Amino acid sequence: MLRRALLVAALLAPAAGWAQTVSLTVSPPGPFGKAACVAAGNANDPALSLSWTVAPPSGSVLGTGWTYQVVALTSGGCSTAPAQANVVNTATIQATLPTGSYPAGTTDTLHLSDLVTHSGASCTATTDQTITLCVQLLNGGSVSTSVSATVTVQLGAPSIPVGVGASPGDSALNVSWADGTDSTVAATSYRVEASPLLASCVGAIPSPLTVACLDLNNSVTGTTSNHSLRLGGLTNGVAYGVRVYATSSGGNDSDPSSPPVLGTPQPTRDFWGQYVSQGGTEQGGCAGGPAGLVSLLAVAGLLLTFRRRS
Image (tube, rainbow, N blue to C red; front, side, top):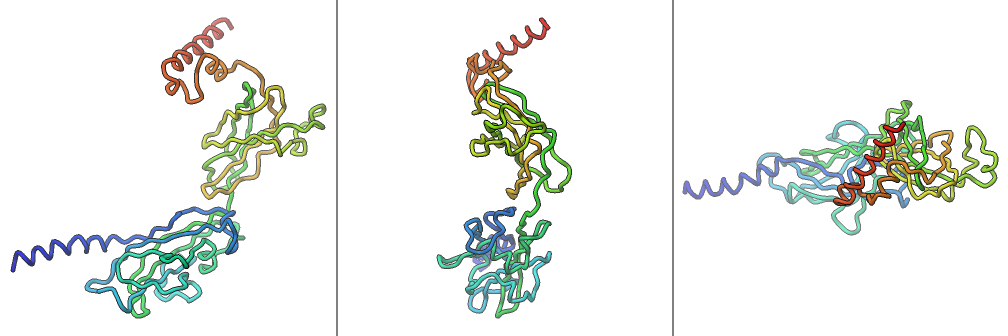
């Protein structure tokens, strides 16, 4: 009898420990930007899915009478008596296990717009909206326990990049910039845009350069998480107006840097051009194998010789 009791206890212990590891996962987790905070049915309205593990009260056996309820709130905690307007799920979610997911069927859907609507959050606010998402375990309609997670709707944009500079490279421009300081929203990436000047402006380039002079239909763009970028794919001898955008983790763009900075690619033998001409590859000296490394050393020697002569 003692051996049987120990065996039963050993089998039950992992299950009990597993049930106590509570969590609620939202996929994708966000944050979501302004473009995603739209009315239901919009193509930019992201579809979401939830999965959770709860800890039922000790001694409880889930089954008949037990259900799950998904609630969206703008407050920081899970209310034990949420208003019906805050309840997200349209169909009853039966609770037979301490784990669950929503939507569970092919006819159910869950979108960001549902969370915004049921929580009372605003897509037109000037500050970020934090939605508290709760999955509540109900017994006969009364909340027994709950698990929560937050979803952030990011409505602010980063500061406009400042101090933009563009130096010539061979079929490229070497662009650098700094972060602005007029926004609390951090930039996580940057987009560099070079637009050729329109023919009407080439002969008489205004100072400062204006957007009206840019051929925006033929822009070349590149992205980076750094504060500089070598933007290739340009044409030597063609004047470009360069602008830089900062982008937040939610995908919100700042306004472009202003005024556009003038830059003209030239067949100059800058460091990169010398490196490539010596056999280097775009992947760098290591990726280029021994030839790439030798080429890089050769370029370094050329630069040292030039420095001594000057």
